[in-house]
Length: 123
Length: 107
Image 1 (tube, rainbow over the protein chains, first blue to last red):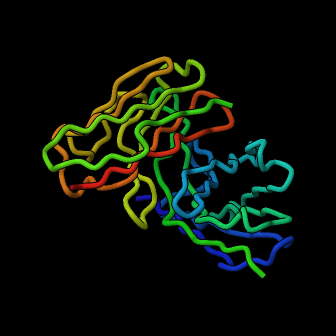
Image 2: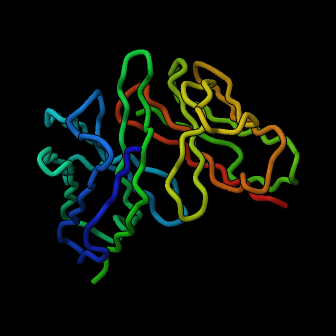
């Protein structure tokens, strides 16, 4: 059973950089046809896809955040990470990491999610 | 960007009633539409993939239909444990997008 767990500071100051890590267990981050994604959800609101990374290091970002986002992968630690710079209060949200399956014949969708971590941007 | 519009935003339903949630895409996405259930303080859980394909372990009262731009999630015989927010999600093109969500409350 694959499990994902987010970790990182729960409080970030405005204009600073939000940094989160997702640790994958129960399977190798390098195996199979998977992309590893970050998604966020402000309190009481819907889901916003931030971006994703393939094990090769290839990335795709949401154009709305692209100028501020970097997603990276560390296969030796079975982790991938999110950095969002120049944060404001509008970046306050629960941040989820999730696995995106991309297998011909099976499909392309999110199959496993982390439990989420609340990040508050405040001075 | 493909915009997904869900309706209604909120629904208060009596147990055993039928629930219908719709999701409309701003352009045709074939059947690349998936439904997720999110209970309070939990992460989303996949309910239906590719508009109508069932997921192992998901109760059979959940079903999906549609293609192109119009999709429906149906809960036949609502149970108390189904109180949650429901989101549609498209995987047809980047950026990946989600609908705004439908909150289902049990009367």
